Length: 316
Image 1 (spheres, rainbow, N blue to C red):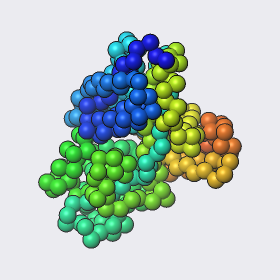
Image 2 (image 1 turned 90 degrees about the vertical axis):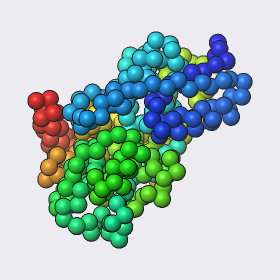
Image 3 (image 1 turned 30 degrees about the horizontal axis):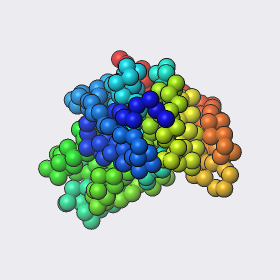
């Protein structure tokens, strides 16, 4: 039992973050009716800086740092994150305590009304496509160089308003976010993994907490999803070894077959000209070894050189 019956959950203030946090709150309340789970909201650096592309801000903890400081100061007990936003190296004293069952991790195409009869493959030359992700940008530039890509920032509703007003012709968004907000009907096309491997952890929720807090950790047992956890641990190990944050063009895809886990990965140049791909299958119970092996495989093919050039470009 925790010393206090009140457990404080820190969350970003965005609509999607709150939907995700309130879902965790409800699940924990259902499993632990003797506890009160209180949500504490705050804004992060990534929420506050909206006029600069994410990659140029250059901080791997854009959407997590303030929540982490809250836990380290013992002002909150756990934090709910979109796992794709959580850096692979956490501050000393904090751990990834739980991963919940994953929604569809794929990227999705959302289009303006005038393009409802088009697919990603048939969008006309010059179509303005909004994305804030270098990963999506690089892969789509490779397959669809005739499209025009434009950075887009803001929460999901803001981005959709920009699309509907005609500022963009199409957007590339996470299918999971749209589904969680009840906006699944806005998905025009789910993009095949052969075109766009998704972000590490995309579609899953991660719960971060203090490492030396076993009473809090014990509360998570009913909501941990083992297959998602193993898949995401492999993905995060791959990303960690490549020393890439969520704002670099690294994509993944994972699948499980009985006792085996397969991890596919990609590192892409920003212009989309170079895609370095690989695939490793290994023991489901040792996912981090799979991630390491794939990272080394891609490094041998030149992936680190691509990442070093991108990092240097954004630091200059």
